Length: 248
Image 1: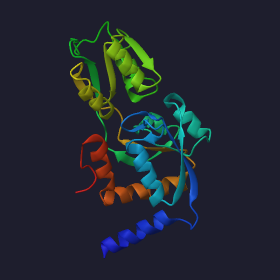
Image 2 (image 1 turned 45 degrees about the vertical axis):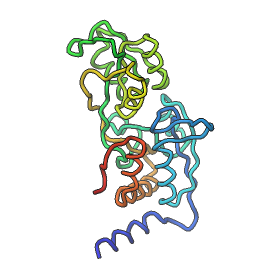
Image 3 (image 1 turned 60 degrees about the vertical axis):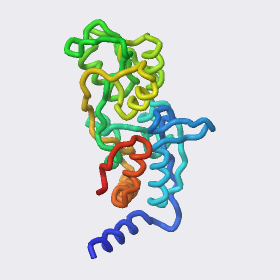
Image 4 (image 1 turned 180 degrees about the vertical axis):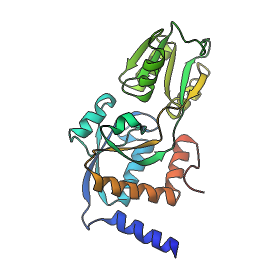
């Protein structure tokens, strides 16, 4: 009986009206495997598949909008799209300006990547160049903890920080582990992980304007649904080879 009632409540929450609400989803399109532009010039990745599934379950007619990372929150607030789904960690600082759905990916440790022949003392980081993507939780972390004795290089995209790491223009890059792992694995031994894992922020959720409570409720109900039937864990396993996190 409880399962029947849960299914009925989810159906009511997800169905809304008979007409699909038009919603624009903002993403970066430059953060594989979360979201990226594939060889055919189309958006692809974990969050693209997830976002399309959430829209289907929430009876939303969704359109994707690609936006650079450093302006992704201001452009949400300005109304250029209705929700952010772009590997964004839920943090208290971001909650000052926007709301979040529940998480659809658990907290992901940030990791340091460096050249395999490099030797860095992480107990005394001094005199090195640290690369980060601008306006990220990693950028805030290194500015707070290492700016006094090191050079912090901020990049528009995470891929640019990796390119400079490979070229030897930075000594180490700090980024989400889920982003770095396939890069280090594909480097054929040229890159390695070093130093401690760093837990910054909470899980990853969708960002919304504070006044959009109805849309937030619909998306939360859809996330409940993909968690409950195992769809979310299947997508995480497909794109990250991790889990299960949300279903048994």
